[in-house]
Length: 272
Ligand code: HEC
Image (tube, rainbow, N blue to C red; front, side, top):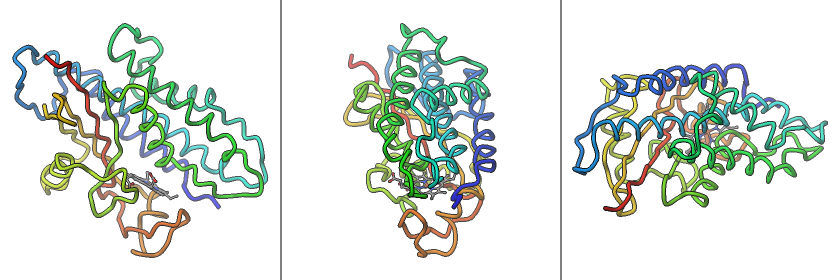
C-alpha cells in the first residue's frame, strides 16, 4: 500500500523550501522576529549568520526527508529486495533537493566555515542512517517497513547529536497534544513558542521565530521553523481520531493546513 502520495508530499516540501530559500538568500530576512542580543560581543550580523546557518540545517533535513517521501512506494514494495537506495544515492538526491531550494551546492561551502562544517556533519548523518537501515529497506515480502520520513528525520537528528551535539542540536517537535514519540516532546521554551506564536490566530503562516535563549544551561541562539500538515500526512495524522494508522499510532484527527510540527535548531555559543 502506498501510505504517502510522493507527489503531494514533495510539493509541500518544495513550498516550504521556497520560503526557506528566500530566507537563506536575504540574510536579514524580513519575516524574522528580531530578538535583543544579550551578549555584548555578538553583533546583529553575527546573529543573522547564525539564523542563516540554522535555516541551512533545517533545509538539509527537509531535503533528505523529501527523498524518503518520494521513494516511499519503492521502500514499501514487498516484491523488490535490493532497492538501490543506498546512503550515497539518498544523499545525492538530498543534495539535489537542497540545491533546487537554495541555489547553493552544500558541498561547495568550505568546511572551514561553521556552516560548511555543520552541513557536512548533517550530510554524513543522512548517509549513515540510510546505510544502517539497508536491511529493513531491502526486506522482501514486507510492504510497510516503518522507514518513513519522520523516523528517518529523527534518526538523522539523533546521529547529529552524537556527532556534534555540543555545537548544534536539531529536533523535530510538535504541539504537545500531537506528539507521538516521547523523545520529540517540546521543551518549555519550544512549547511557549508553539502556543504563543505559531498557534496564535494572527501568526503569519510559515514565519519562523528565533531568540537568544539558553539550552541545557548554555548560551545559544534558538530557531523554530513551523511545518504544516498536507493531504499526504492525513492518512496517519488525520481522521478518525483514535483510529490506529499503519504505523500503529492512534490518529490525531488533524486537518490539512494545521500546524503539524516544528524543526527546532539550537546553535550553541562559545562560552565566554
Ligand atoms: C505513515 C504514517 C505517517 C505519515 C504519512 C506522516 N507521519 Fe508524521 N509521524 C508518524 C510516526 C509513526 C511518527 C513518530 C516517529 C518517531 O517515532 O519518531 C511521526 C512523527 C511526526 C512528527 C514528530 C513529532 C512526533 O509526533 O513524534 C511530526 C512533526 C510529524 N510526524 C509530522 C508529519 C507531517 C507534517 C507529515 C506529512 C508531510 C507526516 N507527519 C506524515 C507517522 C506518519
